[in-house]
Image (cartoon, rainbow, N blue to C red):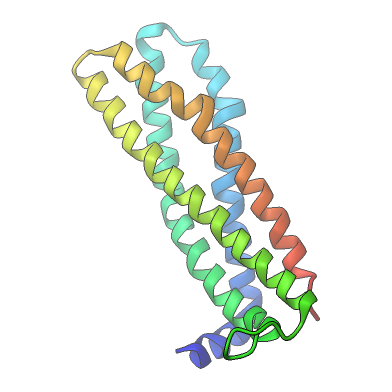
Length: 178
């Protein structure tokens, strides 16, 4: 399987890197647009419209980014294996063979961990959105406001911060080897 992944990666390197970066841009950029552009527009709506419109917009964003999250994860694995970060850092028994390469390999794991936390946070935001939509349907606007408020105040900004950090690490990793 590893040999196939390496061959596949090197056969489609530019395309895989492109769709990986595009996926990060769509996911992180969508959250930035939602938090810093759409959020303030929603504040100008009448209170009765604000929560349903916010929920609808978040639902649309989450549907758009879902396939890009999957693409991001798949391409990340292909790139990590294809570029041989592990092979350059440790031998078959896991012993460090190159300290600098091992540091780079640790950055690969850090970036993977960041995207994993972001994906889990995404899942939690979807769960909160579903709960908010149910509350809206029942006319329980205070409960909906609590569910949506945490998404806008904390969860989206957290994913933006993590996403920008992961993008930076991606640039570092891209230029860390020949």
